[in-house]
Structures are given as structure tokens and as C-alpha cells.
Image: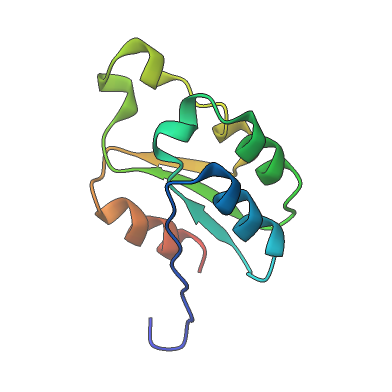
Length: 98
């Protein structure tokens, strides 16, 4: 995507993820909340307040994993979820925003 600007951000700290999302200096969000998927109501609340396209991506198929990993508290506040496509999930998310 030569004409697109894509910024990447990664943190293992929930508050830092929230701070980055709250900057709201982007046109869309592609997020892999990882373990926060299942229990971070703080990230979910932050996503709920972002009025831009949002896509949740999971490298693995969360529905083939342990029962507690099959529920996402963040997904209801995104426009779509891609799960189980490996790293191609990120590419599919970007393509879907075009």
C-alpha cells in the first residue's frame, strides 16, 4: 500500500494501549487485544468511544481454543473480527478498510 500510512503500536501494558487509542490520531483501528480480549473492559470502553472503523484481529482461531478464550469483551465494539487467518488477518483487515 504505497499511498497509505500505517502505524504500528505494541504494548504489554493495558494502560499504554488505552492511552494510544485515546490519542485518536488515526483514520481506523486494527487491534489484536491478545489476552486482553477476554477481560479488558477498559479497552472495550475505549473502543466503544472511538467513532472510526475498528477491526479486531486474532492470529489463531479463538473458537478452537479453550472455552474462556472463545469470548471477546472487545469485539462488540468493533465493526468486524478476523480470527484464524494467521498473520494474513492483518492484511485482510487493511484490505477491508479500502
